[in-house]
Length: 117
Image 1: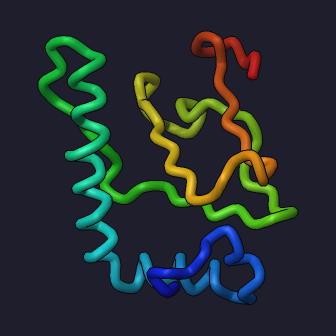
Image 2 (image 1 turned 60 degrees about the vertical axis):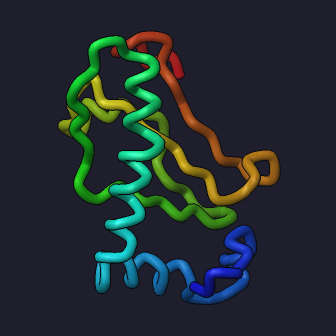
């Protein structure tokens, strides 16, 4: 994808989503460097400000990336612990388009195990 591409219109370019995801796995070094910097510069300071005494942060080595195009189904409500993630895992969502123009949603339980999304 070109740096100046309007990602909200990626669905108008047949195959662009597949090429984008393939490029991340074929030559992951550049993406990995940006991802690691995002964790160090954004995520860790966020936790440090919220959790007094937090001295260690563990994070997924390569993130789960979902590119959902119009009329595509991604994944329904679920708890990551059902898939082997630690129950104290925290997700960071980085939206690339305006949520108001999509049907994107994040489902959150009121407490672990309540399934009241």
